[in-house]
Image (cartoon, rainbow, N blue to C red):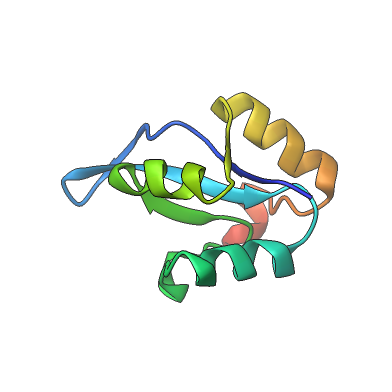
Length: 89
């Protein structure tokens, strides 16, 4: 099981944001997020939105830094990906 984090490329609220996912289970992802004091409101169906300044701490705690395309590829392969059109329902 691996928790992955991508590059902080998404601007919002005056900051850049990255995505934190698991390539195995949401339980693993939530446990990791709780251990890093990420707020539950940061969870968005299949990932956590994390601010750029949290990346060093998340990587030090065991998250693997990967490019965004790799993160999406592994999220899809895990079966945990929630497609954009399914987010709107």
